[in-house]
Image (spheres, protein in one colour):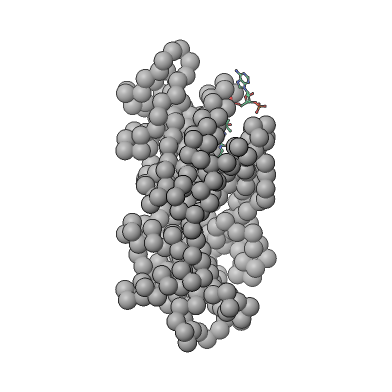
Length: 327
Ligand SMILES: CC(C)(COP(=O)(O)OP(=O)(O)OC[C@H]1O[C@@H](n2cnc3c(N)ncnc32)[C@H](O)[C@@H]1OP(=O)(O)O)[C@@H](O)C(=O)NCCC(=O)NCCS
């Protein structure tokens, strides 16, 4: 990439400067560094990075760029959510992204960026840090295919568990057996309050927050698919299409046939589980995506491999969930 000329270095090697989310050159630099370090399977365009760095209500985010000979070559972004325990734990912060261009690795840049991120999170009152998985995640965790887990282990991060993105080509999707004859339909303009009441009652934390953020940012209400019973909304799931506000590239679908789509989160009322509503909702969502032309479809951030296997989904990408005690 061409380095923006306002990047300055303090010497012959590299220097660290603050990331400015309002500067398009900084956003483009993150996209180029992330893509250069992680490869084409995990490529990010500047528009997707812009989405990841839009302000999230109640969140604080900061970043550092490493600059070498006027060129941005490394980045770390971190975020915290200090004041809204109903949505997310204030004492757990996130390292949203860390990457160094291959030609500049093994020179201490990644270590310096990771140490900065840990210090910054501690300054925000966080006693633990998680790699990935933030409220606007670049990725749920560390993509295991990168082969960089040892770098984080040696710096005190521990592998808590793994999670997966699953994928299928919906061209041949045939409706799941066992779907119930209940109404599943996209949310309509008058459904907003009923859907909010559902999230507040059943999933009052992160999923309720994500719904409110989706609407605040101008996302389509109809990207939510609702399952109705006699008492109202008893299930909901979010669908992402190529023209949704949330960029579908967030799920790195590049290995799949286009058009791309995504399904999730999926939630059913606590007292209505075990009756086939979840299966019915997912089936309706997949049929909606397929009928809208979607081929390559991702169900992200799940460990329910067998359950989604019933719909023809198979593991597509694996993530290690890495945490460090910062106290
Ligand atoms: C993980 C990553 C950020 C590390 O960046 P880096 O700049 O290479 O990190 P460092 O140079 O500080 O450390 C890397 C290794 O080089 C060693 N090193 C540092 N300076 C060195 C030098 N001058 N000469 C030789 N080795 C050196 C470090 O000791 C370290 O080895 P260790 O892990 O065994 O201790 C980088 O590999 C990367 O971008 N990977 C792809 C993206 C990725 O995995 N990101 C996480 C997704 S969120």
